Length: 161
Image 1 (cartoon, one colour):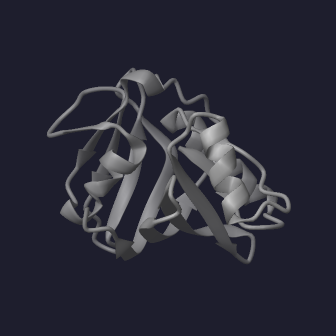
Image 2: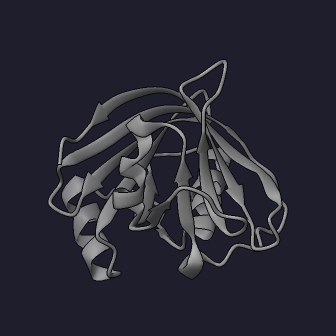
């Protein structure tokens, strides 16, 4: 997946995109003046098949829109994030998804990761949350939960594929 930002992103949004790319084994690019078509072409150029665009409000990442390589909107989620400078120790080639939130199972297709019922290490945990739709945690190859997490406040769009 190619991860990019809205135009003129804050430092926090750029850092979030780089962290997300690192833990998912994706590619992150600074958008600059690229339009949607140019971003989709860039994704194909770097052998990525989906595109995620991170938008912000007041300098903080606030929404991720996922698109197919044909430009079709697959999923939009409103988010809050927790960032940290820790080493991730995640092996993206062995990464899996454990989802407790049926509505977000589509992330396994978008990220091209196996959806499993349980895992002990090296996985993305989409868990239920009392104060939001879900929390996305990243568990490293030692089974430790990273401080980097995504709080899904609302799911706006889900493809029916």
